[in-house]
Length: 188
Picture: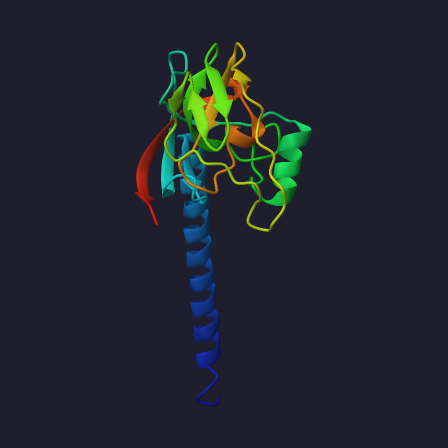
């Protein structure tokens, strides 16, 4: 028997222990991720709101102005185009996109005027300037002004490059998943 003959089984045993440990760690990671998802935790990777960990908090009242919400966009041609242009991420909403985090700035019955910026019932909305082109030079069309229809909300983010109701218009309030609560975030 050579001196190296006993080393090979020891290496194989160490590799098996390492593989087992990695499997256990991977399993625990998957379970934690599933528990976090089911608990309403989401990771925001878009600059419209601070980056990081957020939580969806159930909304037990009608949505109101100034509510920061998670909302699923409806399945429309405009949302499919926004997804193909990269304005939205793929996700688990029925429309195939991830829920958006936006602030409600107008509810049913309020008048929204869109010009160089946004006015709601005659009041200027801060940081609501419009872009005529996206970051790749493609034209953007603002939503025409009007009254927010019943059962819908008008959404906004102060981030200059945000894709929100300034462009896609009011969204059904039925798409609201809940209030958006920061857990561990970073505003770049």
